[in-house]
Amino acid sequence: NSKVFEAPGASDKKAEEREEILQSSENKKLIPKVLLHSADISNPTKPWDLCREWALRVLDEYANQGDQEKQMGIPVQVLNDREKVNRPNSQIGFIEFIITPWWVAKVKVFPDLFESCQLLEGNLSQWERAWLEESNPSEAEREKVKERVQKIIASLRPAQSRGAGFGPSVGDALAKGAPPRRRSTTHK
Image 1 (cartoon, helix red, strand yellow):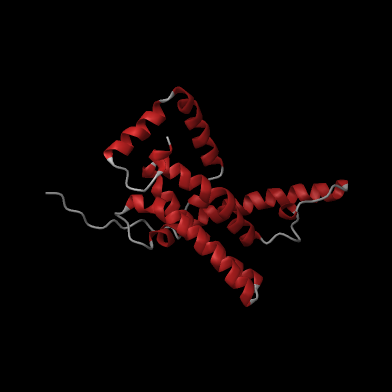
Image 2: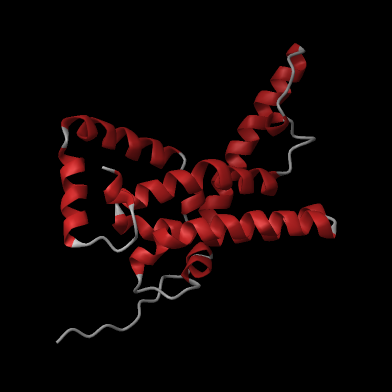
């Protein structure tokens, strides 16, 4: 099965192997669960306005839970403490540790979903900009986050290469709500 997930640009043989894997009865039960969970955590893969709105809603929900925990005298996690959480940085971490590995794996199985990785890249850049504006970090902190973001982007690139008809900056354009531009292709 691991051969299916090797280099991007699956050959006919790899496509056949992928189809065979997707046809197994066990995987037929797993796929809807994967897709449902993907939908539940998909806000970082939506256009920027939706991504930001839903991230802030979730963080507000966490903060409300933290407020209740404080009232009850229960220890509050940093992500739930509205006085301590750095919202943009929390989203960079969410994208880094949860979303990117999940989406890269999902696009290996469903290559037509590559555009979601392009949106993810653009939104990651938006969160980095928001972090810079809100945090006024030291130069060392800037470099550390910049390295993290570059590493995340590098891990997204193989998944994005499945959609070679798009330009390299499509993630930023899509995250800002602009429609993707396809390169002209003429078939004779």
